[in-house]
Image (cartoon, rainbow, N blue to C red; front, top):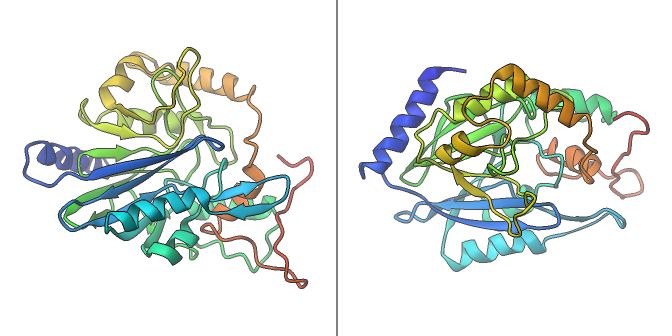
Length: 308
């Protein structure tokens, strides 16, 4: 990871704060069953927009999918006359299925994720015995971002930052003067993401988080999840660099890398797997597409027994 890319992101944020570059508008949608926040970001001048971390409804007992949650995004985008140019994924989620392909059909936009997705595809392609027909080159996505890659949403400048640790493919997107940080961290009173999935690494996660917390203190951070910390009776998915540095339960200023790794490793050993990890990873490593139908015309989700 290049410090020059972090410096570029900082300069972008500061230029927006000085009024030299336009700021984005943001609308978030929270899906309580998966505790996921989907964000729609747009340029108020051009009305170009991006959708970040969308949710496909999935009923585990029946194996049925639906689009009620994603339809809220469609209704908002159409109601405000927005033109979606990006469908962004911060990583291949293990707790919900992505609705990006369906949203592309409804709204358009290029589907993008971090270039590390190829590592995830290789690891989980073997775990799920996906076969040689499953491409492990990221070709299911329209663009694979590397650290420091630039893109735009209308007149809003954006930079992709590689922040591995939770998974090898995690990306944060600094869009205008705000950052969308995926699962790297949660609200200050809840802490940080787990790092025990295949390809995860607590030491990398610490370094990624501290990198993000080197952005200006006033930078708004939009999170992918919230689980209501003990004593809090409402969901929240927006915080700031300063609030995380001062008060994050796991990684506030003064917490050393070794202390974090010890905490994260011991804590992760007590956690159950996410309820939807089996369908989620199989679908999300394919860019949100379900596995190909078998010879009877039915699509199947595999459950590897005694593997994870």
